Length: 217
Image 1 (tube, helix red, strand yellow):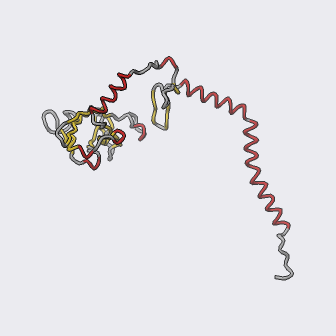
Image 2 (cartoon, helix red, strand yellow):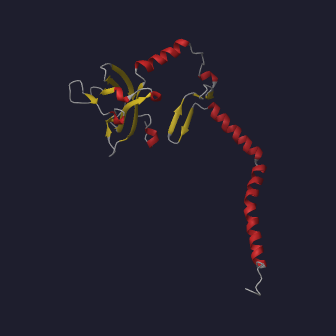
Image 3 (cartoon, helix red, strand yellow):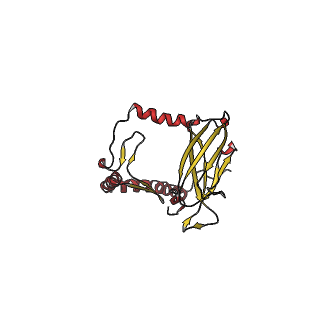
């Protein structure tokens, strides 16, 4: 419309300048604080690194990792050199390890746990649900070659004089068996293949991951 200036009012321009200055103020203040405290921050960082290097345990939330810690390259990153001796492996060590994979047809027995609901105790020990199942190492084990997996958890499970064995023929969930447990036990699994041969795999089933749920193991 004629007669009306397109320029912003002076007060509006001043307000925009103040807002822009405020946006710059906080980053500058943070940079100034870091610069003034740079020596103290360096001391704190050095102290933290020293504590990590000298630590024998690492806590992650409620989970505690124990003992000497090594990197993926085998370098000691937590613990003193006196805690661990590093020796060269041999060709025989590599072969022995490979033979274990081969004997088990590249299948490993693994397990996961969670607290049973409703909350329950046996002999003052917390009851957990545990799922035990086969894991194919790097996909080299073929589930379609397996006919069934027979689990023996010990003589406390089942109605027989010496307990019961549980035969799982459903491969859709990696031949999993879920049971309620307290304490720990040795699980023996016999894997039967369609061609008739069998492989025995064992797994020590424990509740050491209980702290993940805020429960003392």
